[in-house]
Length: 445
Image (cartoon, rainbow, N blue to C red; front, top):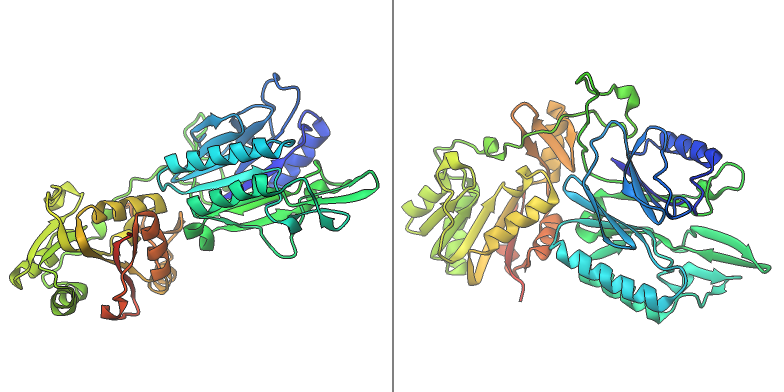
């Protein structure tokens, strides 16, 4: 899906601006529009945008979604921040104070608190920060501006570090989103920002469109931020119950009804142990002095039975009732294994939760082995079988509700970091394989 963020500088009440905006949205095939300062005066009713449905908001912050998609949940946790839930992803639409660095500093601290409350759920924070993060991002006649300084830049950096965010448009030299002549001086600022969780950065594309502030063809004085996100939205239905036609699609996605995920259907019925279970018995358990093992996401339990047959004190856990391993253990284990679990979970937030749940069963000094299908393996399977894209992976079978995503060792590590885990210093104990990625994890001290 494609999200656009624009400061409209209170111009949406102008019919000509609405027409240009609607054409621009269609050109870029935008799915979700969020705006700062969309209209004036503050008390007026929300304004319509052709082809879009108003989600929520006011004259400070507002959001619209293309009519072919269901309206997402939204809320207003702060007067300067609007929260929108797009499937597994949260988007914060922000507009920080335009006048006082001390107020922006306090607002940035409040944003950090809001992100902490999300407890690891992926959040993209985008909008007009009225902040040039670096001196080079804010210039007056080519010299660093005094509009921003340590008062607001240090809280901004603390927010970035605490929430694990990346400034997705921090090019050098910077692309300025506001360029004005004031009192004979050229003012240039990069203040329209997109802050992306670092573990999502490789799968998110962010770009500016500076044409929106063109004096002839544009409709505001700010550049737009365009973000392509690995999120599949849910289609709405018209009064007759028929889905909208593909011609009405803004983002090029296929219209899909809400799906029922059935990850348990990916579990293999094996009579022999997995190669990773064999490696646990032959290498990891002896080298790590592991006696107790939990297979987290054990499916039908063939690896659990193998561990027990080889003398390990092993248990299994799987959330699917049909596998009869749903009871949470009350024990702590030397080694927890999670084999081909993360790659069948349809979004990063659920993957983080799965890692956190598995980590609860580690005893002090214990290890967690995370194994996923490799990106190359899933990409080749998807191409060969024409799997349709879904979120950041694929439907391996839409009818069965099964999902697959290739996950690299680097992505496992990034997800694990949010779950309170870090790579162990003993990665050399793992046997490399082309079709899978593996990381041995420990609780972060």
